Image (tube, rainbow, N blue to C red; front, side, top):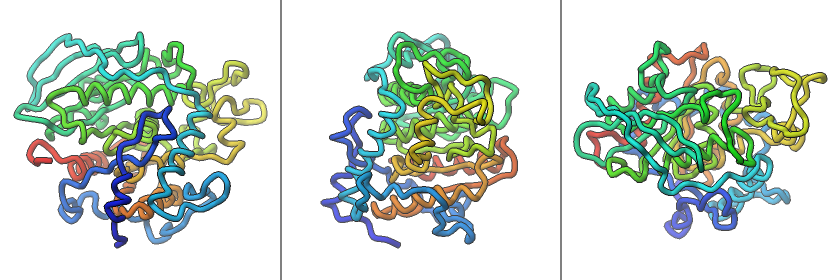
Length: 387
C-alpha cells in the first residue's frame, strides 16, 4: 500500500475555491472512512477491478499530464493540473451563475414517518428560481451525515411513488442521514429551466447541486463535512457532474449513468441539448445517437473533437470516494476509465477510493442499493457513529 504524502503535502489537500477561482483551486479534502473496509464486506471487494481490467487504460488520456505535455510527478503538482482541467471544462461548458451562500428554505408541511421527520420545503435552487423538495431529518441528536439525492422528481427519491428501488433519500434517512431530494429544475428533464445561465444544462444542474449543498450545510442538524450526493441514471449524470464541479461534496455514488462518452449506447446520451449538446445556433434535427444527418452540437461536439472524456471529471473527484453502481450502461469494462482515477488517487497517497459494482440491467436491485448505502455508511458514518 502506498504511503500517504507527508503533512507538508497534505496541507495543500484542502477544499478548493469555487469553480471560477481557478488560480486558488487546490485539491478537495477527503473524509476519513468511518469504519475499516474489512468491516464493510458488502463493498470491500469492489475497490479493485476484475483481473482482465487491472492496470488497463484503454484510449483514455492520462489526466496526470499537463496540457503542455509535461507529467504530473508529485502530489504537490496535482493542484495545478486539477485547476487546469477544471478551467478547460468550464470554458467548454460556460460559467455558472452566482452561487447562493444561504439559499432560502421555506417549510411547507411536516409529518412523522418511520424514524425521521419528513418535511416538504420550497428551496431556492438558483437565482430567481425555486423548487419544491423533500427534506428528511432523522430523530435524535445531530449533527448527522447528509446526502443530496437528485432525480427527475423528488417523490421517487423519498419512496412516495410506485417507481421502486430508486428511493435513496428514504432509505438513507432510515439509516441516520439527513437527505434532501430534489427534482429537475423546472420539472422537465428535456427542457430544464436554466434562466439566464450561460452554461450547458448539465453544468447548470451541478450549480443547482452546489446551492443544495449550501442549503444542507447551513442546517444545524447537518455535519457539513459529511455531505454526499447520489443519483440514478439521469440523476447519476447530475451527481457525477455535481461532485466533479463542486468539491465540497464528501463522496459520490452514481447508479448507471454512463460514466464515459459512448455513442454505441443510446442511453449514454450526453450529446443531447438537455445535457451537453445545447447550441443556440445549430439545432440537432432530432434526439438520438449522433450521425452524419444528426450531428453533434454544442460543448459535446467540441469535447469529442478535442479528445476529452468524462474520465477527466473522475479525476476532479479524487481523493474523495467515488462509487459507480454499474448496470447495462456501465459494465465492468468501464474500469479502463476508472483506472485513471485510481492512478490520481495513488499519486495523492490514497487507496480504496474508487469502486464499481455491477448488475445486468439498468434498473437498480436490492443488492446494488445495499452496496450504495454501505458505501455512504463506510465513508460518512451514520447516526450511530460519531464523526
